[in-house]
Length: 290
Length: 337
Image (tube, rainbow over all chains, first blue to last red; front, side, top):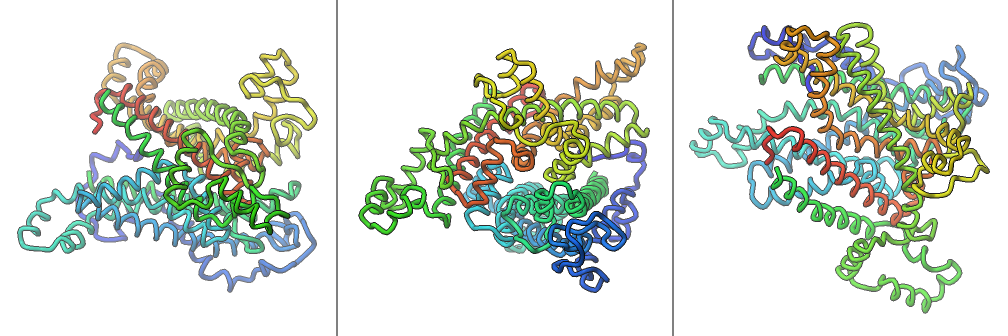
């Protein structure tokens, strides 16, 4: 459900984008805030080890201290600084989400493009596989796969890719089916281009926008599911400062609310950021295709 | 339309077979040893007993035979034996299902009521502070990790201010009402025990709100956008021209039309509810199949987690089917193919 603004939609000049700067100019303010928030977390991941923070794994003060000027978000049950752990938590959560989304996009888009382009048997097999996979409630499938493979972040990531690839297969297949009918594709075929060239050079470059928008939105959801799996003990294992397992430590120390506060806020900011940015991107691209 | 529904109905058994096959493959990959659940530990060193048990449970059979047996057992409602509780998984699930259903239904009621109210408010006062606050409240609900919002609300309302009781379905040492529906609130009413009903309701309130809040976001969003769209349609202009007040246009004309898009996201909402229920039950020590699945997954108890997954998939498929039927019925213009 795109949030188009009926007041301006009729007047928007239909011209081609000049590049990323043009897209940025057209993004609504919420999407810009979302993009900046994501940028903040990415920079955090890259630079956090140079920050003047306490060691996230070392005992720095008394146990279970409430927030103070020395420990902004208090200390946890082992006397570790919760603020430092929250910041270092990004180093776990963000790259995992990047890898999971990238793998899901790669596997799903490839299979979806093949299914849409070649049709026939490959289409039937791939799409039935998609149908069966989406018949599972996502978290239960992820839990079952993670339980079979055993706990750990790598296995949880595999489980999440299994949950997520079908979305991209469906998206890409629908795009390829639509774009395959374009006249320029017919011209390329008439000109003697081989099927892989037609698919790769003439069709796929037109198909990436919906995938990009979806991947942006899914990024936050992957962070959320990864944290959920860690929370129930199937993802990251202690003492790593992963957001979900930090909240799970907070759940056992009921009176010390601050242990869970930081990681919860961190997850919220990532999920909000990606849904703002995804919404904004969709509005921009929808208007172009309108 | 009938042809479409029939086609969807025919697809369901095949999808279920697919779900069961995936579950079988996973059960064969699991690192947990099924023998450990069947043979007492001190007899594991006795090859005669181990072989006898293997033969009895068909563990010595080749893979295709085991697959057929597995599917046959599923058809008879046999989901295997849990490694941890050592009881049939179907018995465990049947015992715990009513708790989950009570939680999910209560959450759905809260979520729909909140979502409709907020959606109506923000469409009526579009662009105002009310609109902004409603949308932020809804957005935060669907973006917060539910295990975190549950934890924080539990801390605020139970630990800090003692407005609601703690975790579980009833206070410790309180006998549940006689089992009729398995819903403690309804059973307590049926038994005519009002104080027990109050206790059950107080325990249900917070987890149901936490779970309901998580789906409020989607519902608010869809109600708001379809109401705003409806308010600019010809029928709304006609109603206004005939002198109907804005409130009547909104509730009498735009709202019924907003119900169709609401129906279409019910299946989607259901996926959120299942995810949320698993995590909410873990936080609130709610004795449903969600907390059962969490415990099973943490102890690598595949038959149990697989059983819950199959039951969850059946429910998920049925919810999606009902959504499709409701959608086709409510909106005959849609050509389904």
